[in-house]
Image (tube, rainbow over all chains, first blue to last red):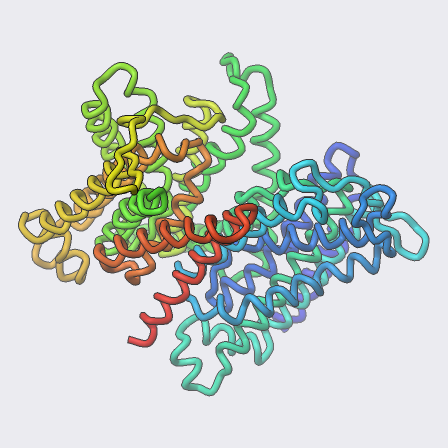
Length: 344
Length: 274
């Protein structure tokens, strides 16, 4: 019964999320689209981190790969020399496939690593991706960038603005539903067992390496799909669109939202995207609270203040915002008894 | 030679990482920031002070910064998870790099090497700065190893590394020890950073690459051995330079990172086997 109610609520919220772009002003539309894109990546990463216990600081690399696959395949050759000018929808389908393929090949050696080793190795993956974007100039446009990506087109209709946002959130909702059903299935139980103890899971007959690889591939494909939609949003790609902080931010979204909760991942994605946007806005102002802001302010705000907030959240809610708030609510309900237990 | 000297710097930063990991269980992502801070402060101070004094002042300043960061990174007792600690140190790295950006701007900084005049030893040209980096690295690692073995604080750190619970039971303050470990490794990283700055200019956002390389050096010894971290740093520095020399230099960054990946993978597999 609980599950049925959950599905209904999720579907209703999802329908609302898809409908929302049509009521938003153009100023908020891009932000809303970015939230949806982040949610797609965060759901995939949450599955990988919360349920298979693998930290990946390299999702940004797959995000970038998906975007460049779309950029190269969809851009007409007269606008970008290496462009293929394929059907935009076909290019969008190719993005997650390419990411899945790369993840499957890289995952075999990478997933032998655990914990911090995997975190740093995947971080290196992002650095390598950036280095390659700079080096393979004829394919990626290098520092100058890849210009002339057409908007997404489905059955002869161009998908831009609010329609683009609706498609992104549609994908996010479908991803969430797939994720939820995966978690509730036999595979989900196996994954939770792996997250608790790989040795015990293997002893119970679970194919640990196989499950981990499948989930790594799945999360990479999701990042690639989101990256592809990101390329259609920007219609222009350069390495500056994929700084290292992108990969870090995805992990932060999952951690802040709460490990092991897919709803938390969506919440984290929305909250962090909103926060970064607000900080960027603050940084571009001339003055704040009577102080003149220096020229570096946008970067200082979006990096430094972001980092400071991150430290605060992790110090006081080490398990993430959603579980932390749930605990606070439980404590408030229990009243004095709860405070006593907490102080002890 | 440049490989050995950058490798030595990675080793110094990596040794700090090992020290912190062993005493507090935290893998410090902000370790690269200490090296960058060291380089930047040195550039600022070297104009007004004799270089030896400037170096000393820099190391002390960064060590104090490190102790403060250690206090934050250890977090609230019993509540901070491993992932939370990693993200807190990530957050610290972000805060530090934005402050560096504010204070030093977004251009790479450097200062003149000890001597522009290269030595010629039987046909092999040696830059004095390189020799200095290597010498200081060896001296610092030996000193650290000696201090861990011969002083009370050193013993306490080692005890804490073996089992923090047991250390607590015999009355050691684990939080203070973690702060000491952070301070010492921040000082070491600053030393590494300020010594290579004349060779490799330093920028506010150099910290990530340094942290990743230092982690590779530390991972060479399974995050547990100072000696292996030292060797790991050298292997990394030299092999990166060899690749740059013999393969297309266009790919040097990508290949350096792949080597690092291999190094991380190779050691961690060893660890699983043993």
